[in-house]
Image (cartoon, rainbow, N blue to C red; front, side):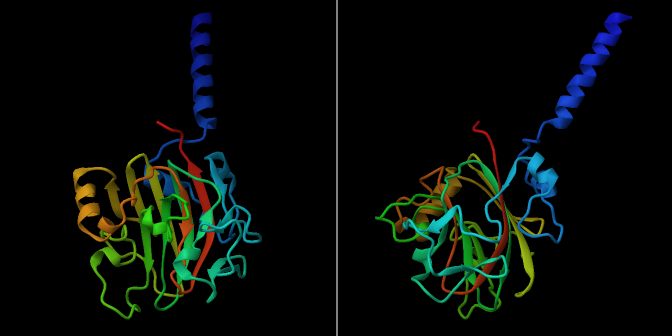
Length: 256
């Protein structure tokens, strides 16, 4: 009888430990379900904290961010109504807003809103060096663009949700201009998943034969360090049009 009680106690203890341990599952849909979608902006719910999410922007200050290849926060960005947004100042793409920290395996969650003709993106695995003028010279981009309001014809790898100049989106789930969208980017080793409003729009694997062929045959053939780094900064792109970002949250995964 004592042995039975001992086994039962051990089982209960294991169950308790599992229940209290934050989930490390990297499945994009499970990660999407962890994100709090309540109206309260720029905060973390208890569940998010328990699952390892951290807030990268509190809506009040610029701590944790700087301009690409700069030591300071660029004047081409402002905080307006507790939202990061672009201004008409500065040199556009060379003044992307960049995280102070570098990341390798992570999930990034944020809300974005576009105006007519918005062109922006989330660039990651960026390497800062004076020899690079733009973050996209080293980092892959999760494209954000109002293709309906863009004045020029676009290739399928340029439309909203694309892995820019590489993989076109499988669907177009973004909301119309003026409405908020939710973006989730999951980087799990070489496997990358891009999600808009709960819909997976792109999935790819770095360094496969397909990836290498796309990288070598298109725009990036002229940028030898594109996709070269597996750890780097994350940027909010300033392409000279206005865009809004809020609820910027990140969850890091342990190295494999």
